[in-house]
Image (cartoon, rainbow, N blue to C red; front, top):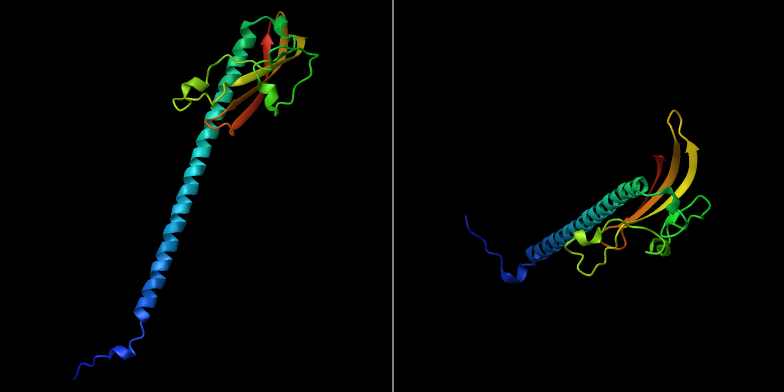
Length: 171
């Protein structure tokens, strides 16, 4: 049996074409994998940022409750985010509402982050509206109802959480 060797003029380069197509497919798979990984990393970062903002807002609600319990009922006069029964509530989605003049803060939350070197993370703030004063059922004294609205941001200024709660203080 003779080995036949194909002459060079009859080779068509099929192996080269197939290997280039395989290389193109592997490149596309690699680029797609890198894009998916990048997207997942962004999603995880955004979820962490939202979680930080949510925890800061919940902590601010607790601080506002403590503020209500430790201060006089006469301070709700419409100044510094302490609204009385007749005061109009602000637009909670407006950034002008959350300035130092229009809201209160008892915590210095932004300095707790080591990557907040330029103070881009603002402190969480709250607004308290005194709703009503009613006799306490079965108790001596009265109860005062408050609506607390708190706002905080995450590590990026674009992540903001606003929470509201109703709080009852027995006087």
